[in-house]
Structure formats: C-alpha cells, structure tokens
Amino acid sequence: MRIEGTHVIVTGAAGGIGRALAEAFHAAGARGVVVADINGAGAETVAAGLNGIRPGSALGIGADIGSAAGNEALIDAAQAAFGAVDLFFANAGVGLGSDLLSATDSDWETSFNVNVNAHIWAARRLMPEWLERGHGYFASTASAAGLLTQIGSAPYSVTKHAAVSFAEWLSVTYGDRGLRVSCLCPMGVNTNMLNGGDLGGENKAGDVVRSAGIVLEPADVATIVVEAIDNEQFLILPHPQVLTFFQRKGADYDRWLAGMRRLQARVAGV
Image (tube, rainbow, N blue to C red; front, side, top):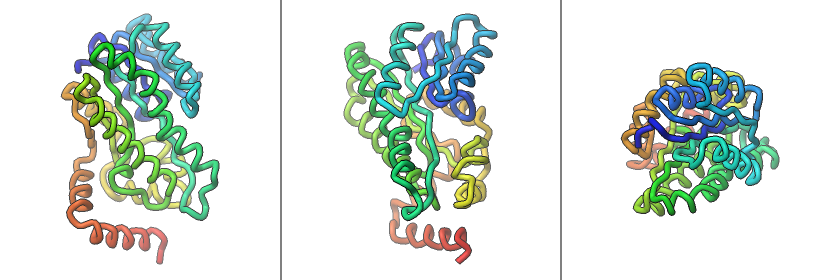
C-alpha cells in the first residue's frame, strides 16, 4: 500500500515513535493524518506543525484509547474530518510495573487496556467497513519483548506478546479478504519510555535494552516503517539482530531460557 493519498490515524503520537510516524506518513503524502494522544495539547501541537506544511492535512485529538469508548470517539472524529480510514496505527503503549510480586492489579489492567485491548477495540470498529471495501491496513507497535521477553517487567512482556499474537491472528483470519497487517517490534528507541519511564527505571530493564544493541532515533524507525508498509511487510524489525535472537529462541527454547536466566541474574546483581 502506498501512503500517498491515504487517511492515517496514529495513536500515542504526541511524541516518540508515534510523532515520528505521523510526520513520516505526512511527508509520504497522506491526505489526512490524525495525531491522537492522551496528551491532547501535545497531539494538537504536532498536528499544527503538519498543517503548517500543508494546511488542512492533519488533526490533533486528545484520545484515551484505554477504553472501547475512547477508540470509538477517536475513529468517529477522524472519519468526520477525513472520511474512510485507510491505515490505523495502534502505536500507543505503556510500560508499567516490574516483576510478578511487585506489579499491581492496576498495572496489569492498564497494560492490557492500552497495549492489547485498544488494538482489539479499534480493529473491531474498523473491520466491517474494511471488509466491505475489500481493503484496509492495521498496524501496531509491539516490541522486541513481544517476540522475546522483557527482563523485569511482567505486564510489559506479557501484553506485548499478546499484541504480536493479535496482529498475527488478524493477518491469518482476514489477510485473504483485503486486510493488510504490520507489527513493529523494535528494541531500544530514544523515547521517554526507555529514558524516563518504568522500563528505564529501577528495574534496570532500560539498561538491558540499551546494552543489547544500538538505540535508534524515532525518525529512523519511522523511515523503516514507511518502507515496510509500502511493501506490506508483516514483521517490522528496525534492529535486525532481533530476528537472530528470535530464531535462536525457536531453535532451542530451553537453551534460550537458560541464557535469559543468566542475563536476569546479571541484571539483578546475583
């Protein structure tokens, strides 16, 4: 699918990867870019910058996608502004909690709502129209943690696995009916989640991510995403070594688990 002339929604787009995606889709010629974020003022600022380049081509919306109603309202507003949605990019995510004994029920609930259920709610709202039209594109930001795991944060690792699984299911179930699906699984990206959020906090997960490979800039990731969507590529891996790690995991699961336990012990200082 070519981005030029499409209507695109990007969630979690007030900063980080989401902002870079919105800017990259706009630069690639999207006729309408909806910049959605729980930080409404931030979303409006990003949209204002895009409208400064091409007036009337972007809309900033404050959206809480951690609920079904929030996703419904976002899509309704986007359609009112730019018509049918061509690409929905479920990028918003949270990194909450640490290990099983420390993560609260609230950490788990919020993680599932934002990292997984938001994808389900958006897809459920959009699929009937996409199936009727015979085409549509759903993309999501998961994480390398969704293919491998995350040292430290149980809610993050589990929900990112679920995000990858849901994207797979969509592709398998509707891929022959016109739906295209992509799933973005980066390692370290220079964002607030890595540098200041829980994944970079006291559980030292951020240090693990940074030590595993180069930390990319969000704009670099967005450039890779645009090319992958042009090619209708399912798995988007800005860090190529993730594929090697994933292959090793599949080739000898017990050996991979043993290696991850050794890494866990080093992180914990045991």
